[in-house]
Length: 52
Image 1: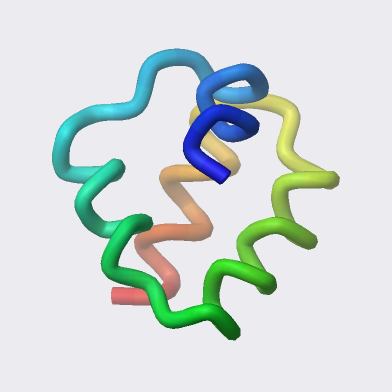
Image 2: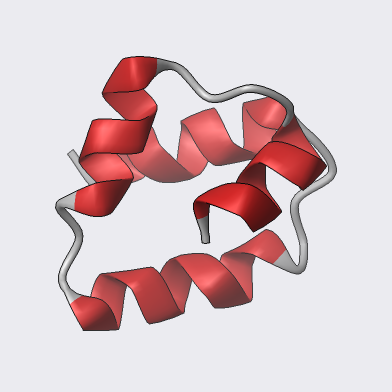
């Protein structure tokens, strides 16, 4: 997942990487589906903020 996100969104911060690594499988699956609609880093940041 991190490699796919980096490819779509650019280099992820250490905080973002740690947050994603801590996700349970269901949340990783949701992120994988959302990633298909991401156009850049802002989409990822918004998605992560909505999960805090």
